[in-house]
Length: 339
Image (cartoon, rainbow, N blue to C red; front, side):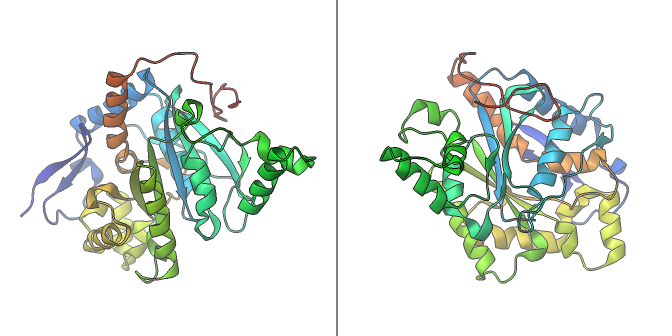
């Protein structure tokens, strides 16, 4: 069976797919004005959102493409002009942190709205659940050094609690951590509404192997705090063996969703990590050129369908106090750092 159908995500239908195989034609064959209107709806709502601070945390192991994905998402949400334009983006800057391109915990605004933020959690070495828990409980502040070990954090906190002399390194650690009890309202507003857990589809290994066990532990930790989990299955084009077929995917990124290899991976990852298949979002590796095609942008923005629904829910249930939200840093804007 063939023919265009629409995948509804949250309250918006923002990406077309088809029933069965529809070939690997040009993306213009399947990307419609309605699709672009749906993307515009997401961007418009995010830009005008006036509810409580809404944070999306992006996390995962080093080198899986978290910072690149953040750059893509920010570029799409901040882009001006029609939604069917190509979107330029800034490539990640190389660093020296054990295979991860960056090491600082960074917070960015989306769509120029300081109340909707994307947090780049950087690479969690060996699935460091301690650092992950600090992030999902709202304790990590902007520019926290993710290379700091949990032992060093606990030692600094113990010194402070015992009124012992703090080293400069201790002060630096504590300066970027929010303190308070778990039920502190100040911490509550910095907890993420959702966590995007990024996996490298080409490096999953054995389903019962070390990598998947670490990711399972991460998802369980996030679920303990009753936070929405979206799995970003990155670099899915890398699991397609034939070079010509991979090139065809780049001409028509949406067709990635119809690939049997990708459908099988979604089912396996969903089962292994205990999430629903519709919460697993396949993505492409970063393009060779420094811009995203309209079809690639549609693929990247899919997880925001859930976020749109969540923000609308927050907007209905609460009245925002402008004094509660401090601006957050965005190196492409004039926003100030989180204090």
